[in-house]
Image 1 (cartoon, rainbow, N blue to C red):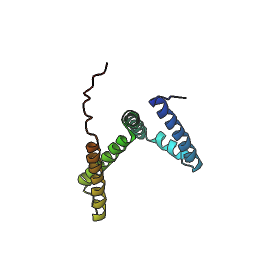
Image 2: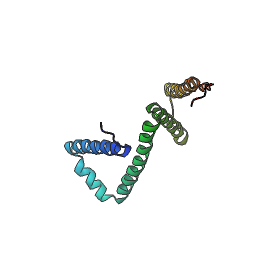
Image 3: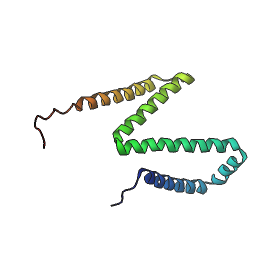
Image 4: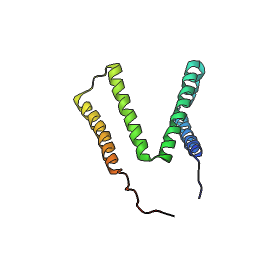
Length: 134
């Protein structure tokens, strides 16, 4: 049985995602246009490089959480982060939010709170054993 490290998994995932994306971009004719854009705009190259570095760092946290904590914890962290990003965007950029959208926001936040509440209730400390082990 093969046991890949976290970084081997990330490398292979990113390699195949890059190959597939490159094929799609080449097939729809946007590859040359994208390369020309990056050649004409040096700041865009800096921004793309920074985005790649930050994405790689974030991916390390995601893989670490999935491997060492749980996929459920990773999902909760990701959902919570996205939720607060949406709220911050609403406040900072003064977006209009329709009642139906507020309902969805409240629903997501309620789900996160309830999941945490039920999960913490189910994790009661195990009773201490009275038997001594030798």
